[in-house]
Length: 285
Image 1: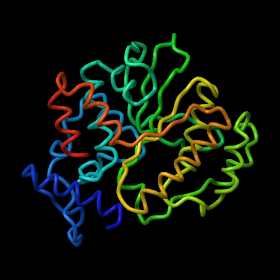
Image 2 (image 1 turned 180 degrees about the vertical axis):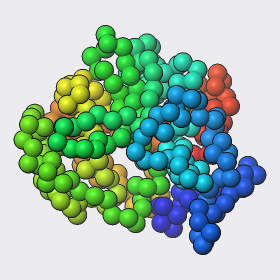
Image 3 (image 1 turned 90 degrees about the horizontal axis):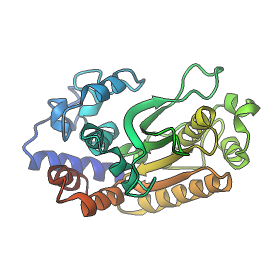
Image 4 (image 1 turned 30 degrees about the vertical axis):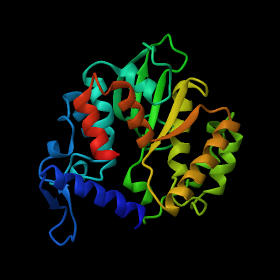
């Protein structure tokens, strides 16, 4: 079974087990993979601040009926289900530590936002949206912990984009990251090197974060959903290669699977946050 189909069918079965009715995105679609209501696809309803983050973003996750976030295989729904809880209960340091950004006794992580933009240059009209950003105290060296989240889309048959030559031509944005510049040239204008990882997106995030905070004042996590079979093996290899490139440029980047994150959360917080742990482990493990 293809990795994308594996994820989709696993989520459909989760819905059936929990008596959640699924509908089609379009009348002529063969697959029922959207919940009737957005709340049916979330551990808890969107709080106003998070809803506002998505409404102001470019992805239009909440637009339409059903909207994108109603898909059981939605990456944004998965991100909300993992991160919103800690924002709501004002325990952001706990999820920051679980993501490998800091120690468990950290008390400098203060808030979480979704779909955050950091412009790379005024020459580009659009800036990429970073899925999740943990904002830290001004006292901390790392001003933000940024997270790019992937679920089923990493295994989609749709080819991902490379980097436009316009980025390569702008010398001022590449200072101090020669290895990432070399990679950017290799995947410009088309990316024929990577099958599952989308390095162009990660490179743009690094450029935006670097422009905003400086090279050594942010950390970036690639949070992805692991599967079974050969596609998983290739994905592991591609993530490892990209990690080595960032390491050569002294960029603070690391990767973690959702499964590893959920297992860590379950070990540390099952007794104190049982409903949340039961939901994310029952659905995504």
